Image (cartoon, rainbow, N blue to C red; front, side, top):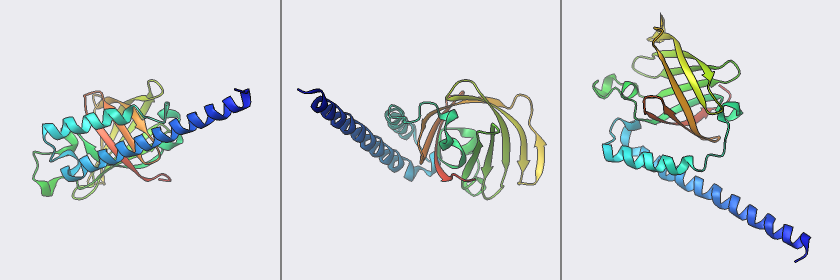
Length: 192
């Protein structure tokens, strides 16, 4: 083979593999969204549902296109939480009418800030400082809670955690918390 023909074949082969990888990631994302859809953000998930979703997420994490998510512009914006295993967010012990309908998270990497926002019925908010631990993990220090979106309450010094971003693209973000919780979020407003 001549070098120029060899390069063409390598280029074609590399392009073929990259295209196949993208299609595989898209198929896994679709599978994940289908698994999440009927379980009310995780509130109606059985242990079997949680295991199935975790398995799908692990497959998706293997295709993470953003190796340094904390340095990526894709992280900035307003994200909607579409699935979690966090009981403090799911609030399963409350009657369904008293649970937040939707939860959002706004990320500002330039100022290392995050804001979690609940929707109806309480409109609670919490703001936090983010301290990078490495290129995919942050230490989180909550500073203020806003009850009903109006009444500010200083967070206790113990309101801390850590979060690792294990998958990030322009549509979807997956994070794992230091308490073992899984968070799946979809981008709703990159300019927020």
